[in-house]
Length: 105
Length: 157
Image (cartoon, chains in turn brown, red):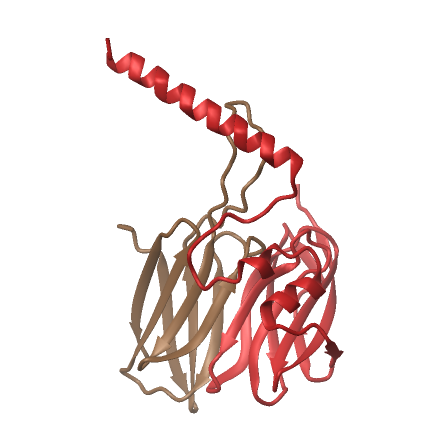
């Protein structure tokens, strides 16, 4: 995707690194209702989000259609240092994906 | 013969035919997720009850209620169908946090697999379609623990 879809920030405080992420995605649940044009809205949603730090997968999130548009995620982990990298990646059901890297502040 | 306009007509016919078939299938069956090639647990997300979803996801469906060990921070009223929720697990060796909404046709909303270094607290947003319970299921030491929280839905118009 040409457009940046992930907004991710990581902050270190008192031994815990907190990661906040906001992903721009329609998270379309899909519908089988027949519309005027005769088409059906097909589902389009993020299925998997992974967050890695130094080759350790901190978190793997598996999402369904119950997640809303532009999903938000926040969590913390013990460890990390200022200046280290955090990578967040998502894959959706149509095979689209995006990744973003941020530096712990 | 094959003017651009005719090609367009053929293309449109094809589109109409395929949508007609898919909608015909759709009316006969309950909604199911499309097939994809990932490690995404399709069977669990397609399950129509909590027990089935957990069985497909973790291989186990005996849940021990543990309201003291799991804290769900969520507003009592979900405005516009979206709720900002925090789930905190005080259970040791938490492996995963699962969010379920029993009232949904497909109850499984999200599953978070955690590394041991993660602080066992997840904040996210979920869609609320009806007033009812939100359920958090924690997997720790191959056992499932659960807690629920009631939420009411209001829509602003």
